[in-house]
Length: 356
Ligand code: SF4
Image (cartoon, rainbow, N blue to C red; front, side, top):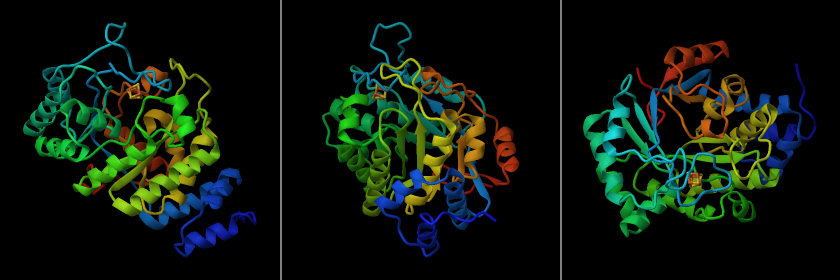
């Protein structure tokens, strides 16, 4: 039997009583022995989800890597005319959507193309909706929503309503990075502020959409920045309630202007475990195998994660930053990873509801 260090015992009692952890508690978790933090996070996950670990049959679509922002953290984006720059037509994307098993969810993210009209987004969603009526369309980060609103000359709420009428079910969680302004100024200086990112998700929640939340960690941010980011997400969830899952995103430095080393596996596991303990109002914590790698993602299932994301079927963004995980996984491989970690695999939909 492992006994907790004196610093962690009051935190464990708080969570057993359902009490919220403080900023100081979050900082203490980042300084505590890793396995003890993992034990606390796994107990929390088990209280909420028992042994069930979910996954989804999904397909990623990345319409373009041409982006006006060219964030230093990003290896995916290009300027128009650069080697490797691409922009897919709606027809191209529909053809890509047809490949393989029909998914339960499309996950659609891309760059901020300076010339694509707002109608492109509407046409993409409405044609996918017509062709795949049962699939959820989880599309665009808050950063892209801000861009589409500008392209369409619309307020955020009007832009979201138009996209929703075309078929949009929910937003993806990217673009949150780290909310601290001084960090944002170095890793993504032209991106919308953290406040605007949160407000756009709040607006989507107000329309009944469910969205996901992320944090990109392992670059130049401090532990304090991470804790403050998680607490800002928790506060937004108190206000608007529509985050269905949190996905910690491990920074991949290869081919980025920002460079650096990226997080270690221990840092990956600790960050995920702390998120599980601090985010008491976000039900699902995802071990995103594309960015963690398969083996760390599997171990993360005993550090607080209760979801492995999905089959993905061709991921481009992380792989252009040197990610060495596969570009797709079969359902059988996902189930094997979960069972081997002692979990009970369950296929889910985009809102994390179980599917037969
Ligand atoms: S991170 Fe997103 S917004 Fe920034 S350059 Fe890459 S694609 Fe563009």
